[in-house]
Image (cartoon, rainbow, N blue to C red; front, side):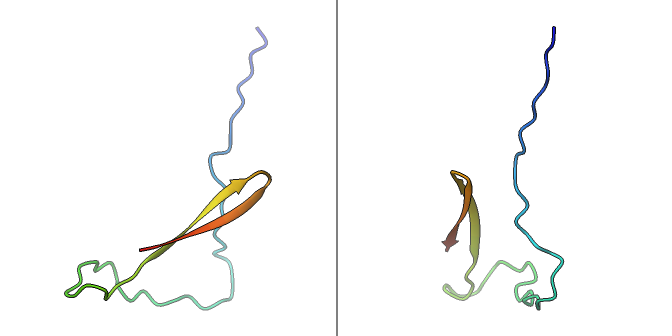
Length: 61
């Protein structure tokens, strides 16, 4: 029948774990419950493919 399967790469690895830069300390140590509001802030960087380029979108909460 001549059928072929074509797979699509689902994600691009954007993390560079092999570097000599200092790593930030884990201040929360997975303790996400805080006693007072506005004590802990988190952020996330999402990469979006726009055409042939990758752009970053920073989310802050």
